Amino acid sequence: MTKPQFDIAALRNSAPNAEWITNSSALRAYECDSYSAYRELPVAVVLPSTTDEVAAIMRHCDVYDIDVVARGAGTSLVGGAMPKAGGIVLGLARLNQVVEFNPDDRMICVQTGMTNLMVSHIAAEHNLFYAPDPSSQMACSIGGNIAMNSGGAHCLKYGVTTNNLIAVKIVSAQGEVHDFHVDDGFDLRGIICGSEGQLGVVTEAWLKLETSPEGALPMMIGFPTPEDAGECVASIIRAGIIPVAIEYMDEIMIREVERFANAGYPLVSALLIVEIEGDPTRIAVEMGAIEKIAQKHKANPIRRSQNANEATKIWAGRKAAFGVMGRLADYITLDGVVPISQLAEALRRISEISSNHGMGVTNVFHAGDGNLHPLIMYDAQKDGDLERAEALGVEILTACIELGGCLTGEHGVGIEKREIMKRQYLPHELELQMQIKDIFDPQWRLNPDKVFPLDISAERRS
Image (cartoon, rainbow, N blue to C red; front, top):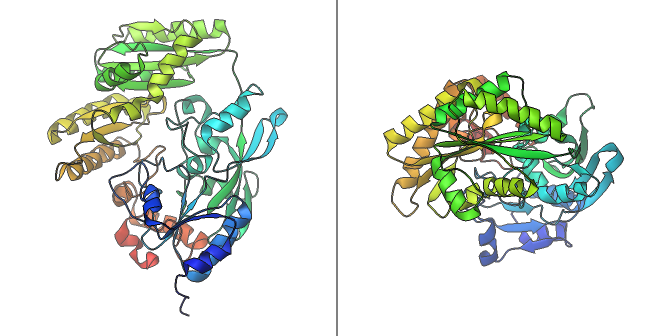
């Protein structure tokens, strides 16, 4: 049976109270996300404000066979929210309300267009906090966090989004509304988290909140080489000490961030920011233990923050890192993961691969769980430079896989890594994953060109 032709007027009528954008100039704001190397204009952008509106739009798109890309705040670093030619973008920005808040039970239900930071602000009024805190926390949406299973600096102790997600309300590709809970038979909530918008549109989410600690202070530890810092991280974890965060910066990143934020970072080859939380006694004891470990790995200097103001400056600098690097060069940010025991070797390999390609790489990442964030610097105005940077990135991610890790820790696959999924997974493993998408989205209309290599998904997408 032949599907009806695309009709923008009929599409508008499916949710007349939603905001619609069809002007070509206004659509430019949606042609890419933070992975701006590739762009595509959608036919239209729709901004609903209720689950019912989302369901009506999805039912219409099912009838008319219209491809849909759900978009939160557009902070994806892998092209995860880049539009599909001939399709529409379903933006979640107006889905930004609190649905229910149970502070006594440490739970909150929000619409998924709400920003990560706003959830934290609401929780803070009741001495609670939401643990996942990506660097894009000020802008990124809860929906995007769920799509990519985002983490952040504090994921070492509290886990990433999937560890803090209780339930989701999802609109299917056919416009049906479902509620998936953690305790309902098969954990379909777990399948949705990290599925990159391929299985449905999440419109509401129940989130787990944590009680705010009595106190928390970071310390800064400098090292003469990146390898020394990597080995120190492994030693801290082996000792059974689990800080709330262990963050890494190299010399290039330290210099640029310090110029911008004046955070008081020492200019060293490699820097760890280690945060301990709890009562003053516990903080002092654990910092002392970490200092002894660090000294065995040639650490110098070692500085404890003395008050909340110093701590705020240290973290403000870390949060600003990615934005600050935009002043220095165009860059691609990777997020491969390696076992903690392989962290020093991974840093050595990144340096070697960068040197072989003759391109600059700087590192800032969540060292506590081995989630690397190499920033490959290139010149977007120079012919062939992007392609060189991408080739370098493939080698770095391949090295992560060879060291027993994987190609993404929190950014997702998107379009950036879809072709190297073959290096991570065997053909039958990719086939099994695609069969799961077949069940949720048999017509492959939800974010269809992402995650899976184009050649092996071509038949399904067509």
